Image (cartoon, rainbow, N blue to C red; front, top):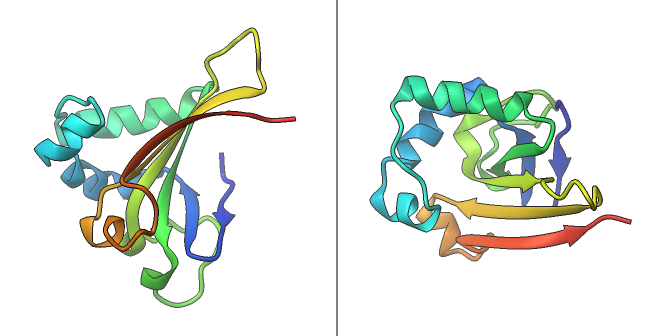
Length: 129
């Protein structure tokens, strides 16, 4: 998926291989691992995981960029790793109801999470019409 979503304070971009090193660094934090019910991965495993998310038709992952941290103009398709603050995972696992999805939001950068950019971690089930 190549779609980026722009909001007033954040930009959501697809999870790209350029994001993996910083994402991997976040996932070394025991508090983040506990909050996300995750196990620590090696950097190579993290690259494999990123690729699996890109290839899975029932999942979408976006990296959350803080608009204030984007240097220069944002161009769709760019990774903009310098502005990464978290991620959004969308799970479309209900085969009986394809318009239902579970959405998880994680803000890993504590300065941004405490700034009320978004909730530190949230999970919701949403229905599209």
